[in-house]
Amino acid sequence: MDSGASHSFISARFASCLDVTPDCLSYTLEVCTPTGNSMYTDSVYRSCEMSMAGISLYADLIVLPICDFDVILGMDWLSAHCARMDCYQKTVDFCLPDETTFQFQGDKGFSTPIISFIRASRYLEKGCEGFLAYVIDRRKEKGLSLEEIPVVCEFLDVFSRTLDQTDPEEDSFCLG
Image (cartoon, rainbow, N blue to C red):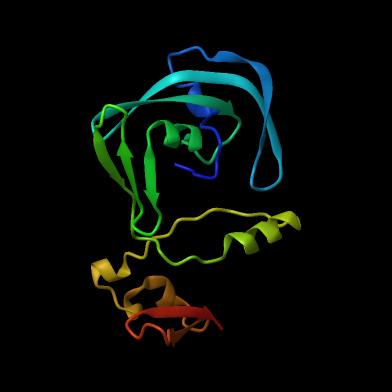
């Protein structure tokens, strides 16, 4: 779900797996990406069914040559399903026209931004290449100490142990 997207999209690769023929739009749509590039399309899959919490919801999905996401549900879909997003709790509450309500719960595991969106945008505008990564630190779940991490042990001369002053329980590494 992307509240920054005005429309909902489907990747051309993922769409090829559907057993449905897309409709042609009566116009060519120009889609501007966060990196400043434009993509053009005139194909849409109408009323695609998806299930969330056992409830069937439908979306018109515009075909784009994207590869990082299969489907992007934008503001058209979110508003049609009366969605309320709580970014802090990572939840989306739905209140459908027939008064059915349910909640989608996202993953709370990632809460510390590595780089701000504005700084990343500036780097991309200057021609830098960007990659989106989602990393979960499972070390604490498994009870591993820093000394038990094989890569760190092998390269002690590269990694130096530092203590984060804001959270004394959290270990961090810096290249040294």
